[in-house]
Length: 389
Image (cartoon, rainbow, N blue to C red; front, side, top):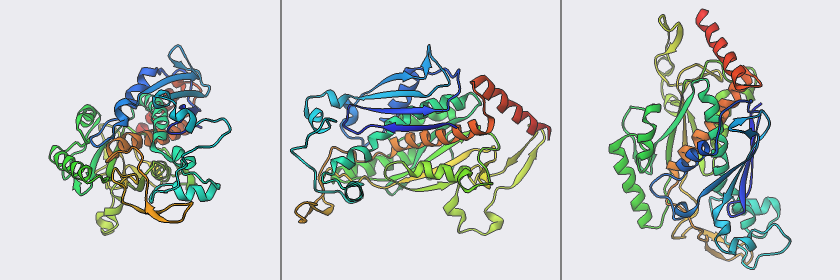
């Protein structure tokens, strides 16, 4: 079973991710992973940290001479800020000691207070350093490996921003894999040029007021084979796994598969994807994507559509959120940590990662194989069997 685990804190020495269950023989390099890591730093509205924070990657294990070995893959992402002076050496040292500057003005909308209450901490940094979205860098590294793995069976995944604040994409056109470069070239990673300008203006207006902005991204997975997931158990349903994975991204508060929320207001006669038989391709097709590429918790072979709604960031450049100092119990405003106006475009890349990891895990469960060659052969055999039925 393909799975991954991340470790590390935002201002610590490094992030580490371990990927277990990847078959042997997948061609992967540091450069392949860095391409995806660079995409995570894209987007208008990012803070100054993105300009100097570099993702220095090291493949620690599981890869030899550019190919996976079938053993766990370990990737280290060094934190360049750790090496910029001594502040974080002292503040985030693993050695016994105490900070001279504890954070006690907790932020509404962040994990600060509840994390302190849960674990008995008196300093919010014990929570926020792990709760930080910096952790997603490790996820994107794992996702880069998953994307390479899925490409072996013709699966490709991309995302685009469809809403930023009140500005929304009004075009019905969806980007395909050949449009990825154009999407990434957009300052807000939007495929609709008219909506792009409105989104940029929304970000500029929020920045002027020292505020933050949320939005919605759409993740599209092309070439997903039939049969991933299962109707048999609640925790094997593909759409349920996707929802949990995408919801786990920091600041995401809503997930939709296909047109889930919109079809809730329709009648049944207008809420489902008609099934037709394609005689040339020898396969069943759906005439629309209202269900988002899943039925009964199983992939249909159509485009997989997952949307994620990200709330405005809880850390503001002009702190105005009312809170309480956990030591004095006096009313105050939340503290300011270096922040973005919005991270919605980058969140789209992280959402791609989580979708890729879920789809890769289910593909590996379905087709098996200790090597990539065996995995591909099994997938092709299954696809051929469907064309004969």
